[in-house]
Image (cartoon, rainbow over all chains, first blue to last red):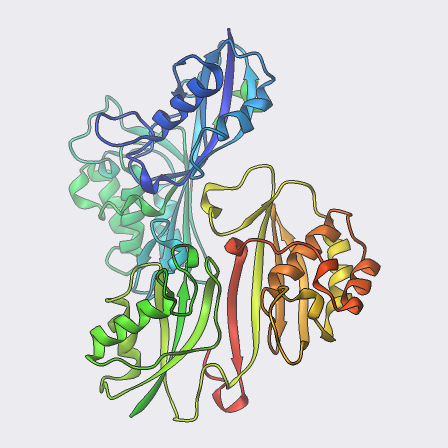
Length: 252
Length: 252
């Protein structure tokens, strides 16, 4: 039995998210079906983690075990032939049996894309969040500096969700602007439910002058979702990449 | 009666082109309907020129006469409220009665976007043309230099189309690559039918080593469509901007 890792990019607009759901079509379901069509057998697909409805991925990672005998790289055109054009397998690797896309991941990077303009471009429908008022990028980066590092991020977790431990190490959080596109990049060893979307909503409030970096420090320390900014829509959110432990560092 | 110029961006994927057609929904028809909804009266809409089915625009220019009394800039959110999200009015200006979006245009710029990769990104479906074999950008730029300037472009006009005079001044034609995206930019005082798509198809043949810059010179001089490269699909083509005579140079 082989273990194959695949790198998958998708436009999440039409899907109910990564995870198979009773209502709605998921990205994983489409890939499961393509694996059956290609190999003739159903395999269990392990993703690096869920992405929500409407969230996109540039390089989601998943693995599955199969007796399919063709070289791993042949599974790229093979699976794509059975997938819709808004889901594409970009690369595939043979990995040893110990590799699991979820449990071997050591960090992930997300990007959130904002168009800071009066009108949302036709080319960014479902793919960016429109913010009409001007954003002060320097202010946003000051607040981002407060959030970077190891903290209990309970204030930036969807209310009602439960985890034993909300401590995460946010190794990167920064904001940059090119033309009217503002991109927030966040890397961490793990993310809480809706964490990037709440961090982004809070940084937008900072950029608009509604909150200061000191307010953000107080929100973080309060460990209460009530104080933070809004959860922004999934449209602008992209899973950029997943980093694996040293022995699997070639999976990217 | 006022004369209002509008700058319009659209994703052409769902439309049969700019021009109103008996079969299929056109971009101009959608804008005509929005003008009626906003102003209560039908106006004649003049576009800078047609774009074909599936072709996109970053900044198409059009004008219409109206007795609608609100400031021109209010027509931006006003028309957008009645337009689908894949067609957006970006700006609007009051122009004097002599302005006509078609006849006052002195040059136009188009871009053609190619993804030079094994797999078309889910984010570029209907928005770029996938070329799987490697393209030599330097070779393409050598051939582009042969085509720049004032020439009879009969060889780069759709066969069966008729114009009195196929001489155009191609003031810009260049090729650049960033990551796996190859962009061809073409500016001219006018374009023949399918000209950018045939120029692109020919430059792709050059980039693949099927034609040389000298072959391209021979094709140009032959004044016969038969010799050139293929007409590439509309997916990758974008009307970038239209430049107007000095007195209307603020329309952009």
